Length: 256
Ligand code: PEP
Image (cartoon, rainbow, N blue to C red; front, top):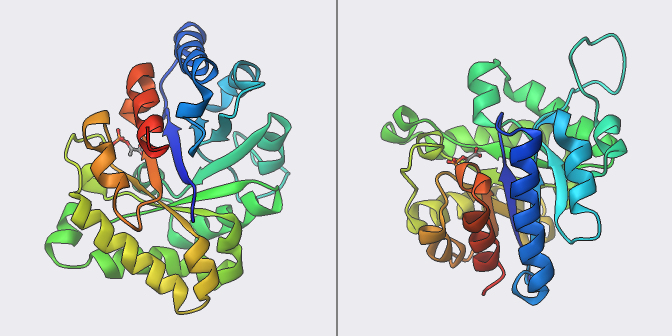
């Protein structure tokens, strides 16, 4: 049985003061009632400058730390870039790769995302590989072709075994930050498709693979999304910045 995962993606939000309030509220809730969270894994993916702050605040809790991006290179003359080993230095367990905002605003293509995925694993990080279609692509019935291509690029570069230590997040672009969520049935259909695509190459890896849903997950819709058989938790943007919402989504994943 796959243990659900809830990962917060803070995006480019926060300040030392705001992060402190948020992290204190979340860690206090976990410390006060650890059993409410024990059924799921929780993580927060914070902006680079706040890794040390978050690492200190999360110490001694079961909440894991993650980042939102990394370089495809391990080290070198790449001004402004951050290597996977640097993220490990700050205690990161996870790193998001291929978020649609990086694909759209920074031109990240499938091959570069696959290279980042491999760089994350070389550094001992668990990549959270984001895939998802735009509204236009969905309207043209291209959802499976798009997410299949995005996943296929990683399978081709890194091999199916690489997914044994990775997470996939289905994030329909039209649902991110829009308040418009995929219905549980829509999410399930795509998650099932992704798992089947992996199963064609390795059924065991597919059965173990954590596939998150992301796109306007809120406390009000988390339960029904997480009830779907192939939805193994969520990648949470806006709601991860509101302590009580994030806590409530973590509890929903834990079955509380
Ligand atoms: C995200 O940033 O990955 C995301 C899913 O955002 P939101 O929950 O705000 O839609």
